[in-house]
Length: 385
Image (cartoon, rainbow, N blue to C red; front, side):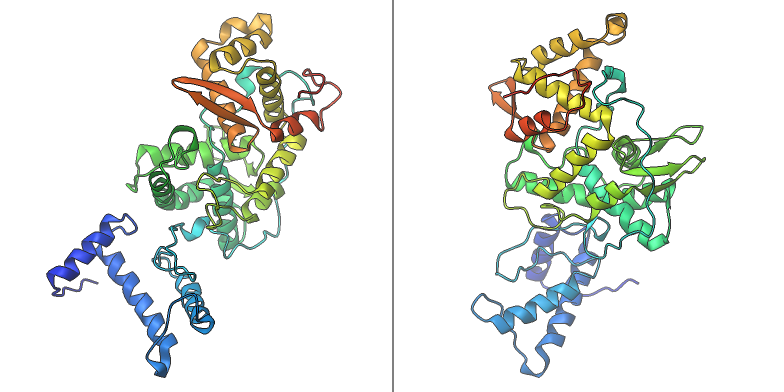
């Protein structure tokens, strides 16, 4: 439907300001959002014709909470409008990635069998692909799959997951980008890294994202990608595979998240303590390749190999002599960089920048992870301190 109307220059200026805030795609979204909110406010005012928004009037605050709670159910409503305490809320998370409305699946995919013995050496080419360098996409996509499974009542065709996540993920990426800009988060702290920012259908960044962080498929119907590598999903081999969350994937989806659920106290918070604990427990028990990667890097950094070059040299010395020639310097460096980035997301290591130089530091959480739960065959013997 197309509706034309006249407005004053001041009204047009206000529309332009709202559009420039990047919270809306076009004038239509601004107007529709405003009308929905006005309708809800007028209904709440009733015959009193007034509603007071502020911290000192609890009844008014409750009324506004009721309005906002219902308004948030509209896909075009942006929570950036008002918070019940009177502070602006920076939030524009699509419903597909929100905790609200999640339903526990009736069935879960089984976790695939482990082909690596606990503590066994894992060659670099078997480490997780270097481009799986951020874990926040795994969180967001588990949320998305949980919603899609509830909507469809079963497993989800990979092509459907690609389409639905691809339609919404740029909006999430732009929300995270605004937080980066507002708090001047750069390089290692940036939240929007790995997320596409373009909404154009078929955009290469969107295609890359869904293939790497939801799942890609080869000609024989085998699925790859971060969710599969971390055993957060299972699949049925087919030209268009059906994917389903494992119990670990569902648990990650349902836990509250500082960014997706508007709970962050620090702008750079990516995960809650509960989420990190869940992921580390899951990796320790079920993802031996990643567990080996973390323990190897923690041990080498603790031994003083705390720069990228020094760590690369230490990792190369661990490669079996017969395989050393097949690892180029760039491949080794990219595998190390991706692993360290995932570890930083989980708080196992931190990066300290001294000018152009980067140094790695093992955190208390990293020490605890290394020193607890090691298998008897672990090659990184002894505790680190």
